[in-house]
Length: 151
Image 1: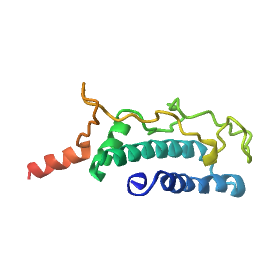
Image 2: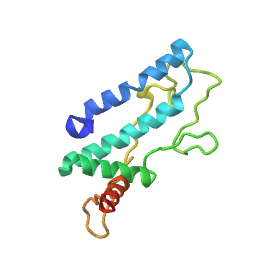
Image 3: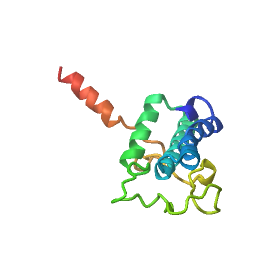
Image 4: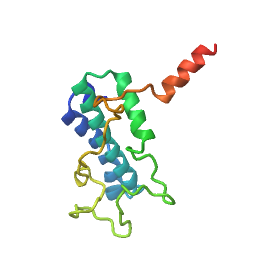
């Protein structure tokens, strides 16, 4: 919503800035190694910024944005799980045997600057043959409508 209501740079600074704290705790205080979670969050922040930019460009509402986020999750465009037994192939290998405090080119060490936006990280749903953006009610909105209708 930050990208929709403010600007892309503000969304990037606020979203990615929040991810610095776990990395600092890991390197300087011996905290948990949450770099895999950090990567997922940075990736999903980039998806969110792409959705926000699209919403802004097309004059979409906050409800429309919520539907597009729901679609990104349901269609697998967002990273949902960081389970070790079923890793998402978009999460890079993070060598935990040798913590690298300083940036190593080409590796993700937990710093937001290590993450590069991926071109075409998110594509809006398209209705067949229209070229426009398909904004459907989210599952939550449909469930609420069903619950209200059954009262």
